[in-house]
Amino acid sequence: MNVPAKQHSAAVPLLLVSVRNASEAADASAGGADIVDVKEPSRGPLGAADWQQVQEVLHFVREQRPVSIAAGELLDSNLSARIVPDGTQFVKFGLARCARIGGWQSLLEQAQNHLLAGAQIVPVAYADWLAAESPTPREVLQFATDHACPILLIDTFQKERGGLFEFWNWDSIAELIDAAHSAGTAIALAGGLRGDRLAWAVAAGADVVGVRGAVCDSGRAGKLQRRLVAQVRHALDHHHRLNFLRSGKRASPTSCLTTRSNSGYS
Image (tube, rainbow, N blue to C red; front, side):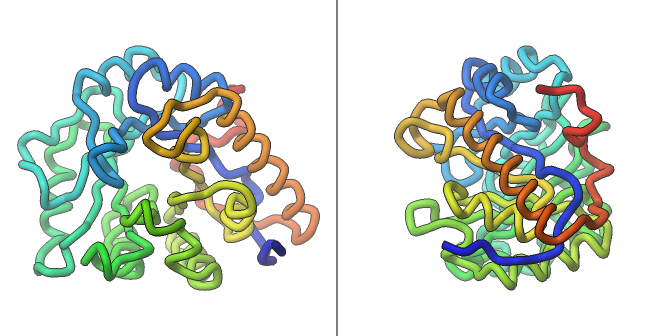
């Protein structure tokens, strides 16, 4: 399948790998993950892991890499329970069912106020927002830019129904990334990204590419495999080089993140 063409970021996309526990965090790190993300896939698209698992991952990583955690859907838990462990850099909040109500922006602001200093909110826009009954990606991007969120994640809500590019076409995603970059917001893409869809994500200009199912032995509920993480890392590097040669380079708003060029990670 042909890869869409677009002038893209000069920075190699960072690889975010979702893990369940410290053992998987070790394999993700050894395989080339730039960001270790903690979640429990059995609890939904942004299922929150138990705090003990989060603490064990943070203890293992020891600030060698940024750590993000999935906090579930904004409407599903008590704000007072969302004070995250020290050392967490990013906290992802889903917005399922928020389209039913007014004032979801205020709820996200309250969530930010409950986080420890140093942790930043990553709002999640669902590519299948009608099914999720969530705000549109453009509305979530507006919140992200208005509140100086460093990253906006575009993901899928119906994990069993298809991947990111099956729910939302490449041109629309690329246009949203352009708008985000113009506003100084980085974009993470996730949701069934594997094979040629990794190339599509790179060509669209993603700053971060998130995976779970692509690096597990039997889908997102399976066990993470180090060799599969390494394969995805290699694929992202390969596709970036091809796109760089094809279209030249362009500045990208990834200064809020640790890039591979200066991270010292391998």
